[in-house]
Image 1 (tube, rainbow, N blue to C red):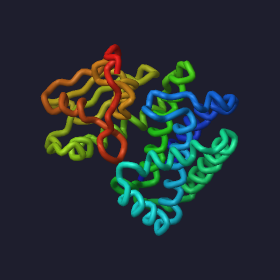
Image 2 (tube, rainbow, N blue to C red):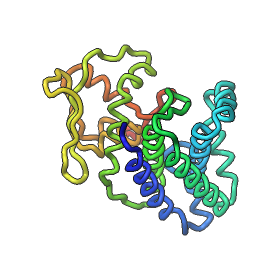
Image 3 (cartoon, rainbow, N blue to C red):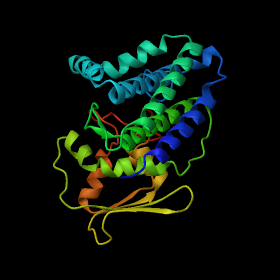
Image 4 (cartoon, rainbow, N blue to C red):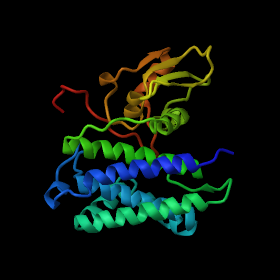
Amino acid sequence: MADPTPVIDDLRAESEELDALVAELPAERWALPTPAAGWTVAHQIAHLAWTDHQSVLAVTDQDAFAREVEKALSAPGDFVDNGAEEGAKKAPAQLLADWRAGREALDHALRVAPDGARFPWYGPPMATASMATARLMETWAHGLDVAETLGVDRTPTDRLRHIVRLGVRTRDYAFGVNGAQPPFEEFRIELTAPSGDVWVYGPEDATDRVTGPALDFCLLVTQRAHRADLALHADGPDADRWLDLAQAFAGPPGPGRAPKGTGQ
């Protein structure tokens, strides 16, 4: 069984990088609109804080988490936005403190989780490493929105390998949540990491293939950029269809981002 410590460590590093972007922001900049429609910087951090709290419940108190799932089922289109909205009402200092406390609680819970444990979630149940990977994916994606709002260029790192792996593993989920039949055959995925390494998944002789930069793949599966603006190449009709549907997050398909230059 894979040791989850490396991805938990990378989640901590990703969170600390985002924390450094917002820690000294004046209050008025927390109210800046981000690329996510209707969400300010405060909403972005509030969403991460809310999801970290849900994750702690899933790991440490599954009965309490089950009650949260019931709430979500009663308002399936609103519960995520409602969580962000409530947190965004807090003073920035309190919101930041809450986010930090939740991160620490989740870090501890994941590190002491029993070997082989699986935790409930809004999608399929997750193992410790998968839970940490999902949190890293969201932290990175929402951090991109914050960085873009603040005019900061973030240097991609090989922490992206966790998001790539999640994006590859959720291929069939992405087809299914869009009402499409997942392909039977595996794809060959070859992506160039920020370090220059090549990350490879799937059989070498696969008919359908996806190639390109790992960063672009991560932007696609987190729906932070439109496929038309990315240097990803698909060979084969199923792989081509996947790049239109891909998502690494649980829940219904998101609207994604419009292509650059469309004025939308």
